[in-house]
Image (cartoon, rainbow, N blue to C red; front, side, top):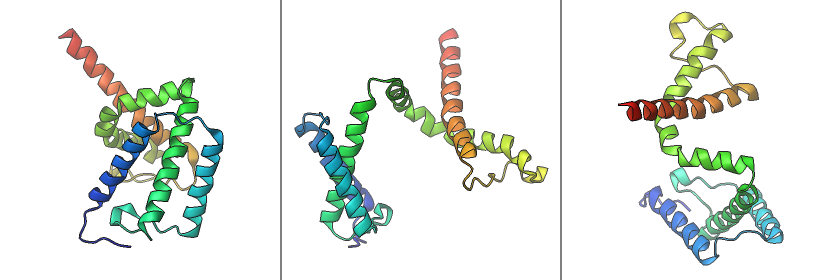
Length: 168
């Protein structure tokens, strides 16, 4: 099914609203391990049987497929989130979520800074250091480096800005 006349934001908003209603009516408790396993199997099964879901282009096989994947994925993520909310990883994810606006606004600059630092290590000519991004491929250390830069640099800039603002 392709809905060319309907903007994909309408589909996304409908799915977001459905997730909101599931959370409100479900009591916000996602602690049943067996429900998690069933949702995970449904998510995996639906995705394997028909993997053509492209929300950017509003392409999906049927609304039932889209609803099944959405509900299953929502339950899986909510279950995982409830399991990690009381440990250190949950606190880190919560901190990043609270500062996501700053990260979203400054991550591009952090990626460019990371490229300026890493590109000389690849032997790229000096004139193109700021224009290119090193080829990441399957180098997970580079991916982790970009991830750290994309989160830590914006948070550091925000912290320095708040310190200067409080001093003035």
